[in-house]
Picture 1: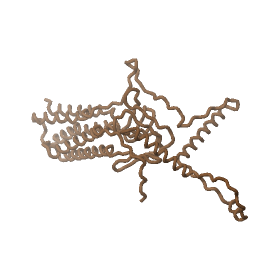
Picture 2 (picture 1 turned 60 degrees about the vertical axis):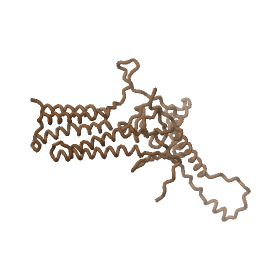
Picture 3 (picture 1 turned 90 degrees about the vertical axis):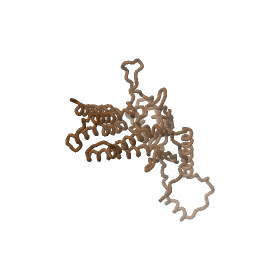
Picture 4 (picture 1 turned 180 degrees about the horizontal axis):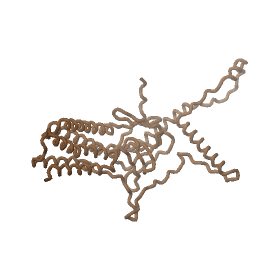
Length: 365
């Protein structure tokens, strides 16, 4: 097996440990508490309900550990023609392409929005959306004020390093290394000298010899495709304008095209300046309300002796209702916070309403 070529530089990523581990730690605590109290605590439930709660708690603990391991073990290597993102058990390669390297502001005044499905975890590794108009890839493990955008074959890649000068220096070294390789791959022209008299056999061999084809590199191929595309656009514009139309201006390439001004969607109702509609970010403690509500109902019913006897049909239904209204709803709220933050309120409210109905049926007259 061929050994991997050592990278040009290893870039340190900005990493907020507390922000990364907040949600995984909560998931581990909730899962372990639910499984431990159900399996070893004083809660009296049916065996099937106990098995379901213990299994759900174990899944929640394992899921939390996996969520925390990926960003905590992530690293970034800059190679001659690519940027390699790696973590424990996986990696992703971003092949570099010609284009400008820019900086985008993500916090403070005039900051651009960067959204991702994994944004609810406190970090972004993968697909994201910049300014609600451009699909990009992002590597951001801390709430940095800005990020570096570099062009790749997957689209632009936003990187939040610990030191931006370190990343820019590594990219410059990679560009110089590619340039040296291209110069070495390009044949050097030979100075003409006085030709010696050739024999007829040598002349025959020279006439039949064919030059070796030149293999285009990735950068040369991209430049050729860009030039051919601009020539096709100019030809279509000339054909559509007719023979007497003024000459068509050259179409700028992707690297020369000016960056479009970011458009911002604002709601103009209520304030003259407008209020930007942001993505809701519910608090982590908010997802524990269903678990707290089910615990209050169970504690109150136990205190007043209103819990049905274990083993009866009513006892099984009551245990199932409390589990679904409490731990199961909190797990669903955690999942919704990670992928669908806008429906966390609906999930939490449903669990609380279910706990209220169960409590009314147990404590009501």
